[in-house]
Each structure stands twice: as structure tokens, then as C-alpha cells.
Length: 282
Image (tube, rainbow, N blue to C red; front, side, top):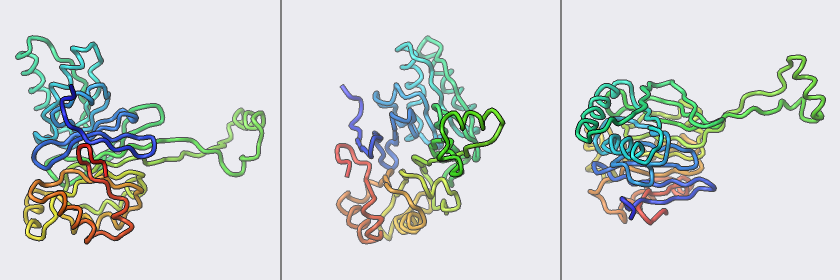
């Protein structure tokens, strides 16, 4: 039996599965990319995913770390890799050690401390890039980027043997190409992410928009979250094809959230919006 009632969204050939309610739990996985952004309470369906990209240490985003590692060990899987802000590594190790003692078995872990500007390979030709956010100490977001090499236009008409000859001579016949697939902001207050080209051009943006009513603007500021008015300003500067909204407050009904989104966003941007809601992908 499934351990969670997860949302399921399909965008082209990519799946997004997850659950995200402000203050309760956030876990957002993309199995084809082998990544899970934040881990929530570690639902069963994300256990096989090898890369956990943790944005910050708040309990609703990070509570499932020990269970994820322990269950993978129980099933005979490798520990996988948990990427997390550097300042979280020491307390995470303490938690894992404590759970090892409770469980009576050593829980293996592969923890990688990250900071803004870092980049890590997660699959052949697939990398995650780390950028800063404004939520808690050390909090970060992640972009997943495909890297390819593309033949330079002047060599496009050459035959295979001709290309081989040029390579033998040490001639650079191609150039690097980056294709931003998905960007996950995690919890954050407003930041002008349009300064980062790979976020602007990311095919999929997964972004929090926590608060929607005018009287909740102060709550958003106090909790370092995004209010709908700031969200509208942010996404107008970006070029994403799909915008997945996470971390919605329970203080506002889904019906009202949809209404306010439609009133506040431009028609073009509203058409791109998908709410991460269990069993209701749109």
C-alpha cells in the first residue's frame, strides 16, 4: 500500500510526483531524472531514487532522511546521495548516528555538503547546479541541467570521416550546450531569479507560492515565503514553459487559490500553472 497520497504530474516524458503543503510536508520527485527535491517524510515511492536534493533543514522538508537511508540499506540498495547545505551536515550525521543506535544497525550514508555555485553530476550528461535562496541559514535551490556538445555550424555538412580527420588534428568541431530541464526553488522569500539564465530558461519551474490573500502578506514576510503578488512579479521575468506551484497554505481554499491566481497572473502565465495537488494534476 502506498505510504502517501501523492500528486502525479506528467510533462512530456517527465513525471513529477510529490506532496507539498505549507508547514506539513514537502517532497517532490522526478524519477526519470533520478532526483528528489526535499524528502518530507520519505514516502515509499521515492526510496529507489538515488539523489536527494535537500534545500534546507526544516522538519517538513527533511524529516525522512534517516528512514530513506535505513530502508535502502534494508533492501540491499546503496545509500544513494543526499546533497544538503554544508551547515546541515554535522546535525544530519548526529541524527543518523542516533537512529543507528536506536535501530541496532549501522545506517550507511553518503552526504555531500553544497553551497551556492556548486555543480554535481547526477547522471551521464545530467548535472545539478546549486543557487542561493532566502529562507533559512544556508538554504539553497537546485537546477537540473543537461549538457551536450553540438557541432559547430561550419562543420554541419561534413561527412563522418572528415569529422574524424579534424578531430585527429585537434580542431574543436563542437561547442558545449546547456539545456536547463527543471529548477526547484524550495522555500524562499522573493528573489530576482531572472539574474540566473539557467533559471530563466528552465523548461519547468517548481516554485513555492505559499500565501494568497492580502492580509497574509505579513505572514509571508515573517516566514520568508512568497506571496502571490511577489510570485506574479517573479514569473513575469522568466520564460519557463511549465510552472508547478508547491507549498500552498491551508489558510486559503484551493478554489480561492485558483481564483486569485487567475486574477493576479497574466493569462499567458496562468495557462502555464499547475498546482501540485494529490490526484488533481491540473
